[in-house]
Length: 428
Image 1 (cartoon, rainbow, N blue to C red):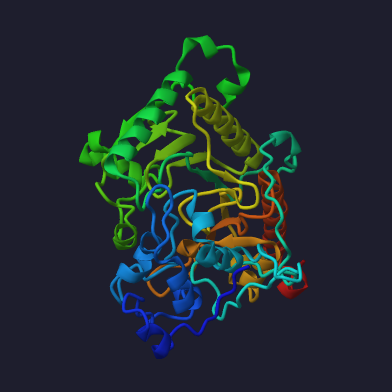
Image 2: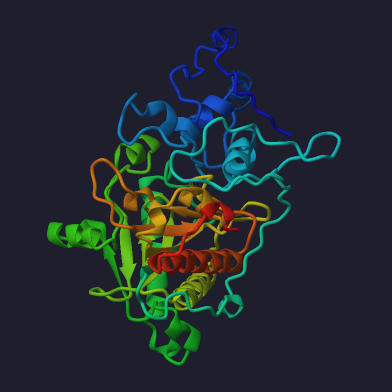
């Protein structure tokens, strides 16, 4: 029932409300520029959720970050709690439609209303544009590894360096990171530490699923208790999250840092299962391993999630879940499955071919820019390839899309190594 106009800089409209933010210097990629019209602002500015979340909390990162700051303004809209997705639907639904390319609302004629157009592609990733912009009626979850393709992507270990999967989860009843109080954040940490006790309980020693989850025998480490050397070492090894940057601070995510933040490691020296606590989201569960065994990494992730959810339910808690949007988290970009599955893969020849980015788009994949060539770094030919979608498909479907897509990329790289000519425009 919501639509948004990109023409939200009318001086006449702005003059009617002196509290309306000045968006005149925001680029066309800004969600605020596109969707926070004076009319939408007037509709939402006095609303609150039961946790006291307001519109200003949602847009704080967008209106606070100084012009020209690094990092630049990103999507600039964060949910303050689970209710935000309903109370502030007039701004969040257009953002969801724009980013995920699904229709989420219907007009009076009971036909799906199209999302407002995006004049500029995302600056972060190349997102697959669905020509149909299909109506999303329900989000399904499937974490059963028995439905994952058995294909071995890199049996010789020549191409895939590492596989890494993570999901974000928020716990019902707690505000999200931009507005959560110090006391609530500490309460959430204590709840998590209580769950950790379950995972080291000798009574579960015969539980095969528990034993395969990667949770048993691990340690929770508070960031506040780390030495500087330990902190820096975990970050350098890509195990611990970074300290908040200007964008996190402007959004409110970095308040009271590092109070009540921490990480669970199933092995201090060489962890393959980690859980981040109270960074951008309440929880980020990460499974990883060297090589390209996606099935093993997904199985560990799936079983860890199952046991984590059981421990929470035992204490009267559950994940934030919406029937249409899936798992709800702080960023509207990170819901649905809230899954990012990636491989670090060597595609030295393929990555330099014309049409490589467009090929990834067709395969419904994305590549992290950190491994691409730039003026300041040497081209390595190593890419962080991940699923480009979060919403509208189950976890198993996204993993199988990854397996098929990465398999195609490796096959193309092998053909180029043999000296064959490859026209990427012809690859589907």
